[in-house]
Image (cartoon, rainbow, N blue to C red; front, side):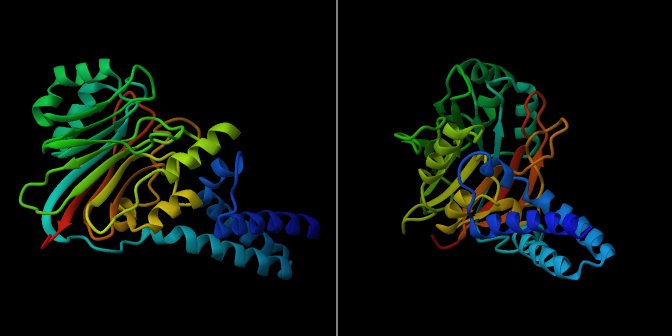
Length: 314
């Protein structure tokens, strides 16, 4: 029993150190860290079991590991930050449409239901955009930055407001299309740039290296001029050091601001535990008034919706 207690404790302690120090490097550690909230839950069960065995030294180490994991995970379930910045509102939604396989009627219905102003679609194809147009998306969101492709490589941005294509944020690194557009927000004098995010998934050693390069290619939150929003399938949770590095430039996760940061987005169904890899990240000067996941038929991701407000006086 002593050997079993210490073996379990060592496993949780090693994972807590990995997460706290951001030591995950390469495959399979990067995908493993995505399941940190589940490891926290398991560690609490382990605490009960080791306490029942009265292995007090092991229990002390195990409790410390659980506390480290809780400090990392629990704040995502507690609302914080700015709910309104006083300026015009913008309603944003992002959906990975599974290589153009998502139900286009469901996508357009979600845009209508949430009164979306800016829509980011990952894995969009020209054929799917044609079907979306036939369903009426162009009537709702007439301005488009189209970086779609006849495969999972494509991405597109759609908006009720005028868009200016600023190129691909991931140009020069291995990544799916990640277009950036300037959004002209009526009644606001500032400059807003939105990037649709989609780095490669960390499914093997080579793709994990590319995944990191894709995340590091994303623009920082603010350069003293434009404010920025990143919306898309990051293939990363807030437990990944690479994504925390993106946040450190001045972004906040919209779902976490509203206490919804632990709500998983992939896979939308099936036996795998759901993890939060789809996000809307906003400059910390931008307020977040609402955030929610959005079910969409025909894709293995849940969409993410956020209502944000621009800072007043800009």
